[in-house]
Every structure is written in structure tokens, then in C-alpha cells.
Figure 1: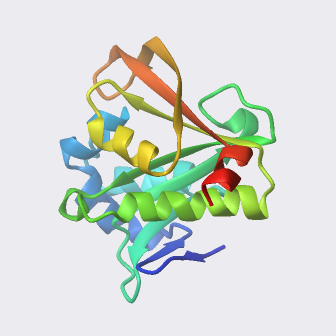
Figure 2: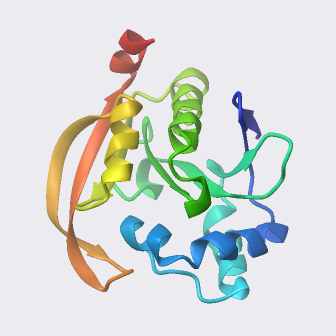
Length: 180
């Protein structure tokens, strides 16, 4: 499945994306705030593509007319998500390479995934989370209509091998329809 926006193409990850994934995921500013450690090699990035990113609902973010994966946006439904969700709900996650920060790329990608989740898949609610200090992620969620739901004070973060406070937001189908 390929999704397109005005500026972006959201497409499945390919093993050939390992180089671009490593290029962006080795930067500690990217993964650490999201809860995963910086990648140490292109081989590690390839392993992530094969074992994590190669599932339905996980898309490489590329700029239209270019094929370099500059980030990732994912929609994982039900029990496969990081939250205890029924099959009628999903979790959205995302990250973007530092050179592309501040250009509105992630909100554009997330809004496309939201439309797909509610319009095509018929989901009833979408969930998203961010760790304390990740203001960029909080702002993305607010721009996309997510509303604060609760805070979990003791969530294990593999990037730092410590527990962090996670804030969880939600967007219901009804709220999305009202915003449209």
C-alpha cells in the first residue's frame, strides 16, 4: 500500500532503505526521545527493516519525486500495538530525520495515516504517546487533533535503560469527523 499527500509518499520499507535508515537513525536526537537507541550500523538498520518495519501499516516517509526514506510513520492495530487496544483501535507512531525537522512533514504524514485509519480501515480510535521532554512529538499530536488522555509515570525506555514518564493522547473517529 502506498499513500500520497501533497508533498509526501508513504510507502512500504525496502531492504535497500537500510543505508538511509542508518543515516538518520544513528543520530541520538532521533531515537532517544522516542524511546529507542541510536542505530550502530547499517546492518542493525537492515535488521530493524526486516523485523519491525516490514509489517502492514508501517511506512517509510519519502518526499514526492525522491525515494530516500527520511522518516517513518506507523499504524499498528489492536494487540500488536504498545497499548492494550481492541482490534478496532490503533496506535500511531513516527520519527523523522533531523535535517527535515520543522517543515511540517510529520503532521502531514500523520494526518494521512489518520484519514486512512478512519476512512479505509474503519477504526474507532487512535492513540499516540510521547515521553516527557519530547515537545516536538506533543506538538505534532496536538496539530493532528489528538487530545490528552492520561500519563503513565513508569514506562521502560530502552534507549536510556531507565523508566520515563509517558503522556498518552487519543483521537476518536467522532472527534476527527467534527474537525473535518
